[in-house]
Length: 176
Image 1: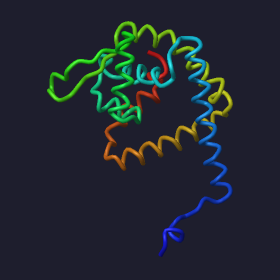
Image 2: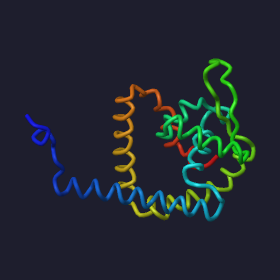
Image 3: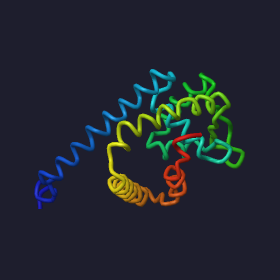
Image 4: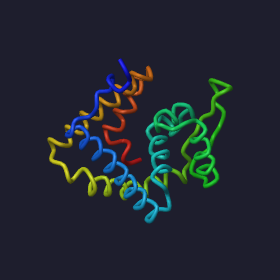
């Protein structure tokens, strides 16, 4: 069997769903980024780091876990954290339980920025996605992407991240 024969090509409906997801999610992220940058001088990517840190106990987590939760490489996240650290929004410290590990924590300035930017982000999420959906569609989107995340966690042997996902679902990830 050749590679060409083994591929289950997308049907027209499947292709449209995939393309709409890709284009809409990219444009949604661009819009949210623009709104956060214009109103608060923070990129969407940096906002997501701050939000992710705010979910963890004491607003701190190991860099490796933070990279995983954000879907980032350790190298790319380290560069991003360096910029946030220079801005005084986060700080890094050695992990007391593992000398090789590094903990990143949210500073008071990071918490203040997050508190100021969260309403802008939530307004954008509502205006550009949530309020465009019926309650049934919102439930379907949550169910579909919950299943996708579980599948990806299973591939990475990371099903233990469900508690973090529950934090997102509880609303803790939208506001500090």
